[in-house]
Image (cartoon, rainbow over all chains, first blue to last red; front, side, top):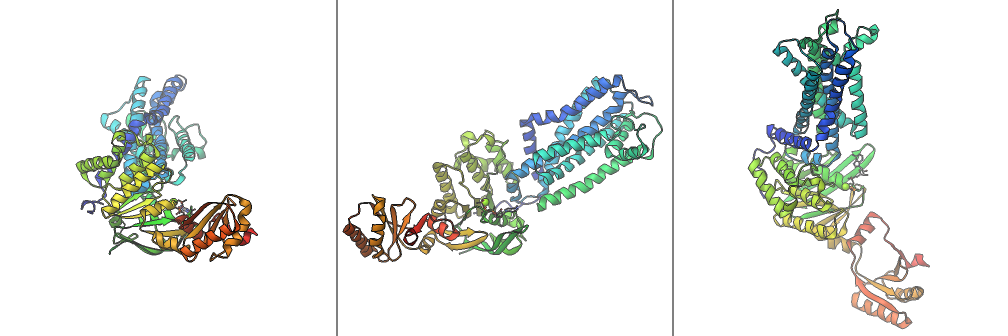
Length: 267
Length: 321
Ligand SMILES: Nc1ncnc2c1ncn2[C@@H]1O[C@H](COP(=O)(O)OP(=O)(O)OP(=O)(O)O)[C@@H](O)[C@H]1O
Ligand SMILES: [Mg+2]
């Protein structure tokens, strides 16, 4: 019997594309997953940007609906944790992963394709948030390049969160535990941040913690890029939000990706 | 002849549980080795080590000429694996499942499609090919799983309990497919709890128990190990049993045994024709009514029960008194 073709085993783009195709088919066949991912942030836009904005005022000449949008996008990124965590844990609970592992292909392909495909629900959620945001009156006040840079920052944050999800999925394995933890991550990081309200009312110690929450620097950086940042006196963490946000996202990706790949390989 | 699978002193520990201790295996190319053993014996652990899915901590193993720890990629290029639980993607259709694996095996898009069609036809899955695999019956899922393990035309095939949960006719279909592979020169290592399956498919059998190989041989050799043929006598009246036992004890080589029904007697005989005649005469003389009188050969069940220490379902005439 002949073996496989000579180039078998080269870990590469074909594997990633093939497996990404698999995940995209899954998403097409379970649209409820995309819809439920998009629902929370869209509801946030409606509740905060439409209902709350009539009573909330922010110092520094920014409308509340403009203020919260960056935070809602950051929240989309945080919900990404759950998407990949569930996907990876589901895969691991079935025998299919063993089949993949027994193939002469590069093992990174499995996780790389998971996270690549899960960018789709993230982008669809962000699209929905954009549409509803514009409907409730959100406007940017900035140049196109900065607006684009804002979105790039948000998408890279989402990507980092997908890898955090992959890690959670491998560690926890159990669906209920994953749902619980990823909901906690989402609530903790998005509400203990400057995403939905400025921090000037907080006691100093809490304010410091909250300011250094990556979701805070991310939403502050994006608001700044989009011209949605209130002009008030700012601390170091807020003034340097962009480098802090970019740096922490890069750091997350640099730490999470190799950790996940090593863990997947040696499980 | 070439050795396709070889394991020497294979050991594996999970925490403080020694799952495998010193397993030796040798499978010649183009033959089938059956790993037979009760739950928890270490069958799956052995298969996973040989298929490069699990690292072992003692001994070494070679599959298709390559070391499973050092040359994982080379091993993976030559093996097919159907694990204990059917590994199919339930959201994808049967056809998509196979094509995806074909692409991952670098057959190219066209090659993957062609191989998929071939296997769908061979495994009689064409009519269900465009349904999600999640809607398949257990038997169809198993067939798809086996088809998936064959995409790369492997030279060594690992099947972990391939027919557990299948009805007799699906089981037969699967057995035929395995035999076809063997006829084409594929080496198969199969684990099973069904003695019948090992008897039907395997050239050699290794009986496993608590992480060790307890016995090895062809099905016939193993059957011979537990003893020769015996005579089985079913009496019409259970009350006549003690009577019959003492009559038979004089002609048998070992004490006759009564089974759970309380009226079926097993007698080990040494020299066949004379002993049969003598037994018949002994029963005739005491005038008991005999319903059945037949020679039996040991089955693999007997081997299995004896070697793995499970209850045999009989008690000796000694204990009976
Ligand atoms: N990941 C694991 N962690 C801890 N113990 C394990 C693990 N996998 C298997 N074991 C233990 O190792 C032993 C052998 O398991 P294995 O799955 O190889 O048995 P098996 O012969 O395949 O059994 P079965 O017929 O039930 O499939 C069992 O006692 C099992 O509990
Ligand atoms: Mg098993």
